[in-house]
Length: 289
Image (cartoon, rainbow, N blue to C red):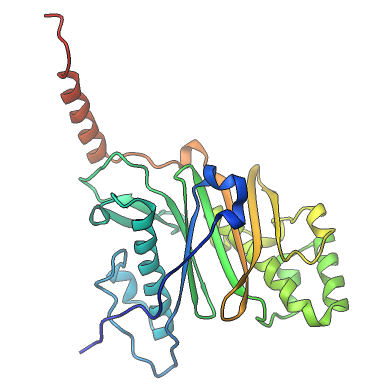
């Protein structure tokens, strides 16, 4: 008999105001994290089918306990943070769907249900035993990435993720700051990764084309920095910080305003329900007859 999955740690909610400052109100960002259960190649894969937001067809493809634990922790964390986001939200009527072209996950009302509420957008990251989830207003798209600053990076990563003056600046830092070279690469990489997530394309674009502004490059290292980055007409607000846990991590959150075409649309069942409610409301009130 397969053991049922259980959370490995308690959930820690981060103070988003320390990251976003006065802009928090507009973005409505909420962030929480938890530790992921350590595994080995001998660890058994637990049953996560009872967890909310877990797709059993998807989990059948998980070949390792590590992947299973990461997925379970992220989905469990998403469920819990949603309950804090809106205590009146009926999670039994919500599911995760994936965008057809990019496979990006998003929250959706289950067909046939509709509460008249806009659902937040979310992003999940996990690395080195940590799972972290960020929610934001439905009007925005968010991407979050976390990496341990001590993560060893190869020199080749520089040319994979950067070009031009950005690459020269990073290479110069790499050659002259030997004790801190990996920390810098992890900060840059989390920035690029979070931006690709908020754009909804994952590794579908070349990270070289996500250019860190000159004014940011002029103040290396970029351990804590807030700035705007432009890509293909999109303006992305980037918030990069260090996170002190059992180790020190680079935390990057990228957020952008959604275009009208990207905003969630009602499905047919929701439109029919809304139409019936409007007709019902039309009969309420004073009559001139």
